[in-house]
Length: 289
Image 1: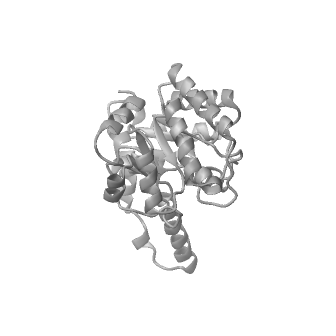
Image 2 (image 1 turned 30 degrees about the vertical axis):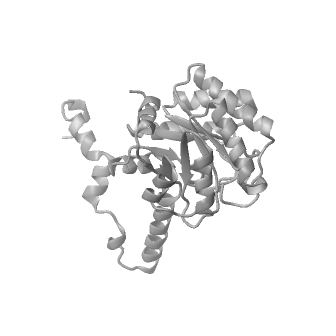
Image 3 (image 1 turned 90 degrees about the horizontal axis):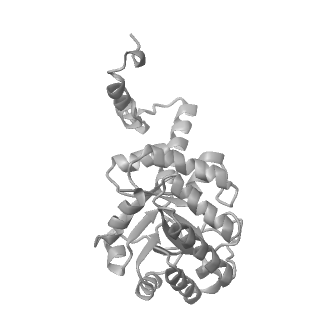
């Protein structure tokens, strides 16, 4: 099955998909190794990991696509790519969707923010007019229907500026245009989350950012409300950054740091050294005597 068809099959099941988000090939491999069936390349985390900058539209289309390709090459589970605003007008959106499909992504997220976009839980967010937002999703769907083997995850950030009703109206139109998954960003209460799921058809995604505006509900609660996917965009990056800072502080102080570190044999195994040695064993030129 293609990545897109694998994701379609997952969405057809009567269960919530818990989706930790990755930021590079290694984090994606760890997600797969721990048994999760789906990941999302978080734009926030990818920008931080690749260019050391905040998620404010600073990464180019080419950089994002390259990051996505590295991730899909490293894992066998479906990967959703963050296509931001599509990097231009409707024709750019079509090219972006085709590019992510060729890179092996199972789905691509396209949103209605003004470019350059901003993280959904930070200040300064603005959305484009309805007609431009609809054109983006229409173009994305046209690219999919024109041969790109990929699902369309349509996102609206209208809740921040224009309220929940406008956000739901936009998402409903996205569904009418043919989007496969709907994402209303940053609802502020459980009641708002329930209203979104009751009002909108098809698969809906919840974005659970620890410390963000949306309530951090359990997977069971999210499924009961009606969500199909629960995304955790910063859990791995926040954990990794905390561990790295603490380790650096211990190193600077000359203190023991072994409790902070993954043991060498497990590190080698998770990165893939053992697999490499096993697969290269039949080839004499790959061995070093």
